[in-house]
Image 1 (cartoon, rainbow, N blue to C red):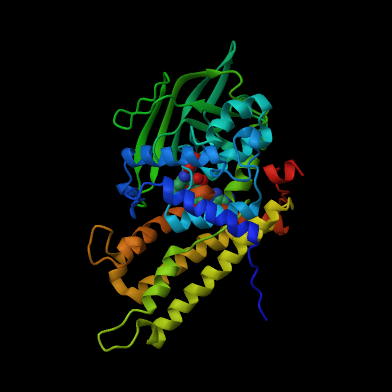
Image 2: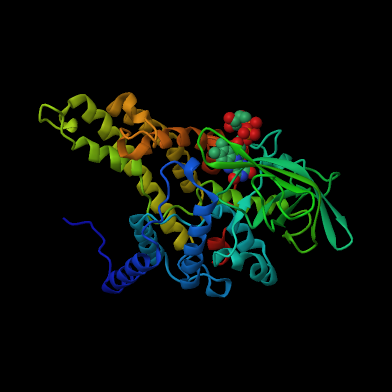
Amino acid sequence: MDFSLPYTNEQETFRKEVRSWLAENVPSDLKDPVDPRDFTIELNERWREVHKELGKKGWLYPTFPKEYGGGGLTGDHETIITEEMNRAGVPENFTSGNTLPPMQVWGSDEQKQKFLKPIVTGEKTVWNKLTEPNGGADLANVQGTAVKDGDEWVLNGEHVYVSGRGKPGFLLGPMKTDPDAPRHRNLGYFIIPVPDWNPDTGSTGLDGLSIYEMNLINGHDQHNIVLNDVRIPGDNLFGGETQGWQVAGTTMESEHGGRGKAFPIDTPVENLVEHLGDENSDGTTVGSDPVLQQSAMTAVMESHVQNVLLRRVFWMYQNKHEISWHSGVANVHGRESSLRIESRVREVYGPHALLNSHDPDAPHGGQHEVNARNRAGQNHAGGSTNIGKVVLARRIGISRTIERPAPTPSTASA
Ligand SMILES: Cc1cc2nc3c(=O)[nH]c(=O)nc-3n(C[C@H](O)[C@H](O)[C@H](O)COP(=O)(O)OP(=O)(O)OC[C@H]3O[C@@H](n4cnc5c(N)ncnc54)[C@H](O)[C@@H]3O)c2cc1C
């Protein structure tokens, strides 16, 4: 019995169009480095130009409405575009994905034209500014303040671990607007323009706003952000003045896996399988060793389960289903299984797996070493694995608190 779901002729024609466009428009010398620490501002500028061209075609955000710069296409089109971009080694846009849903759900038409459209077309990027130095897991406990002064807001506070590649065009996140109101009713959700960040000095071109690099072990760019009497226009607020916690709910829905993935790839496991076919000096293959075979197949199964979980959530999202515990299962399983997979990789390769990308003997150009560092950090990104389990328990109904999903662009427009 054949369970495969073949693409239609129309979809295969679209695939050819995407593939040939990428071949013609992505310079052949432009590559994403294996180690994010080797990503430079110059590379950022060059990729951003490619992203802008993709934006003009509507392929940077294929399913977003055309009126806000998207492609107005289907989830199937997005799957094909993602497959082809992965095949060609083209990185996705450099905006933190979880920043767009709150703008889509809570933004007025005017705000969407002003802030969302330049992001969807690739002109600007936006970073998720949530975590403060005294704690990130309890997001409702934001201490940074926003005070109204005439037609403007005056912002003060500090943030850490804010992820982003290259230079941001905007920062987005909650700040306390009413210090006397109870928890969950005291926040507003603000967008802050970053005219021109200089990574060497921290200056941003906006008075009082500074951004400094934090180089963590994973090598992904995380940042420390300081707001010292920063003034922004009154309409840079999504939702009402004290509705920030509800807006944050939409962000969290996305951050905790709420959109799934059209085409999940698992490069470490693909590399591992390839390695099993390599020949040993005695002519046998690596994969013929029964012990290594057991380890590797455990990794393959874990990866496959994660792939199915992510695709299910993507399908639910595209079909406007309310996604409850399903995204939580994918979120927590992904975090934990990827760490287990890294252990299996080290069992198969031995210490060799930890040679870095600058070592000519590093397997797969150093991918495993980068991934080992990255996976550890990812268990804290997005509110940590512990918090992922807290959310999951609430959704399944075994916690003291029962939680319903916040609106997402999919369910809000259903
Ligand atoms: C690689 C990386 C990327 C990141 N990117 C961003 C970003 O783009 N934007 C941004 O704003 N932040 C970002 N963060 C920060 C991240 O969201 C926080 O690290 C996370 O929310 C946890 O906050 P914390 O580190 O302050 O830990 P704390 O809040 O101090 O928590 C400490 C520990 O206690 C656990 N814990 C806390 N409360 C509970 C509870 N109720 N039940 C069970 N366990 C609990 C936590 O899981 C954690 O292990 C990033 C972090 C990393 C490592």
